[in-house]
Image 1 (tube, rainbow, N blue to C red):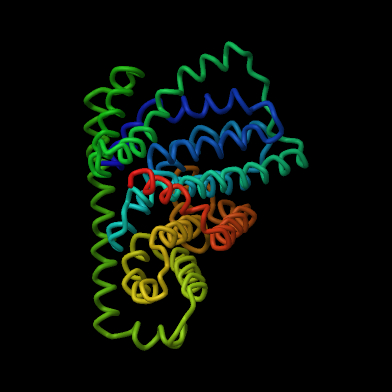
Image 2 (image 1 turned 180 degrees about the vertical axis):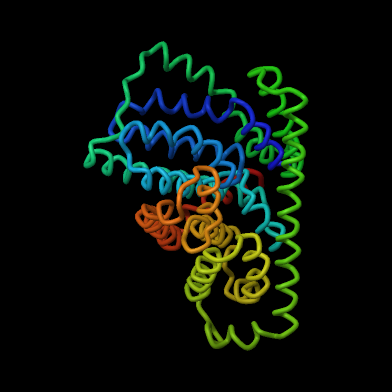
Length: 369
């Protein structure tokens, strides 16, 4: 249902209105267009929950503007695919949904846990592109008038209803996560049909078919992940390998670092859904034994999935960008290293300060109690 809601919005006006709303606010400062791209990816992540959908929806609009402002093609590609990774941390995140189902962890708590790390990464990326743009003297747009800003806010504000419906609805006790997904679809239809008036039945049918294809791919990946997980369990590979890696009495930090490295490397080669299904049963006994908070670990796992999605050699967002923008592989990956380093720094900060991930779900749980 989240995939369906994202499909409806991608085929309509939501992405363009979000972009314009951010652009009129920050486009005139150094790096304004790059920050607009970054912010739009973050906001659209709160609508779609998918990195690929964010690359398509935001990148397709912002890349021509970035090129016209003087940015190198490789920089625009690196920015778009890495900023889109934040979609896996901002609810509704498909990565959190899969992790929650596999590990029997509250999806609602995972949604809350991803908000602050997602915002933190947004600011880290924005600082980087600000100084990059200032040094290169690119990316400054005309300052918008007050009237233009007010109109852009009016146009884009309805789209921001999605995070309030999803997160607010779940924690107000109005929806379960599944019901929140259905409510998001209903709201998407309302926006595109009644408010923006960009949808018709022909577009709806196409979105339904596309959703069926994407969902079918997800279930194939899930099936492959489960089958591979069963195989390595049947062959007793974890019992032979894990004691060598972690020893007989590992600390929490050892387990966390091992999990982070394993997912980071795996997601460079396979789809994150497969990695989650394969590794979760392997690490589960050690996570339980050392008392690691599964919500905190879910943020780290999903962040590694996001990093891997844009990391060579086989990050899925790299090939999405190749397909959409028709650019060669080496050009797509040329400017990714600084962004990957920032994401690894974010991983280290979350490990050192776990409250970044746990403060919101714990606070809401205490309020609910």
